[in-house]
Image (cartoon, rainbow, N blue to C red; front, side, top):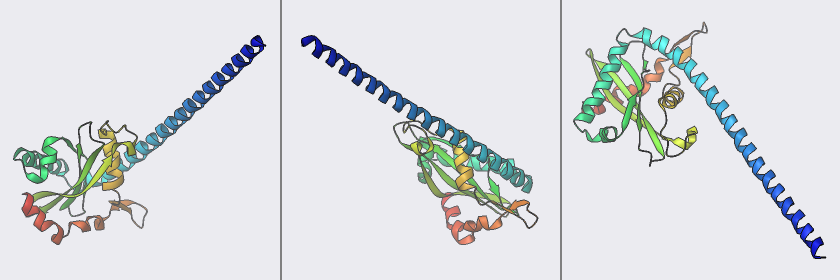
Length: 213
């Protein structure tokens, strides 16, 4: 009788082990499929935004011969603001920041919209992106910040303690900041959508320019 009970218990133990093993295998398979799907989504996202960035770059760079110069002036302005410890740029002085090399410029070459990124320490769960606006007045460019976008890392597939990469930030800027810059003409050709710059009317930027410059 004891021998029969031992065999029964042994079979039950083996059955439980097999069930546990099968359960673990199912979990691993589920995680693997999720990771693969997430990887495919990331690849599609990067492919789409790179194509969009090429379109924007071709049109925007052709709009102004001073494209690179405008970028450098904006970059230098941010360095100057952080160097002189402007209160509204304290965050950029204390964290890593990056001005996206791509930006949108209007048809007349007098307004631009940029994406200014900042990366917070690993103990934070997000990074961020600010709109950076530029307006040309009497042949001089003035730059100032617009709305902020808080970027939670896990929403973009990163662990909460892993800052976003430059590639991810470029994709986000293309998708959120630069979306709407281009529109199709009656000939189905891409062209600048000047209404994209309506947020930069005089009443919106006059006060901000005098605050930050």
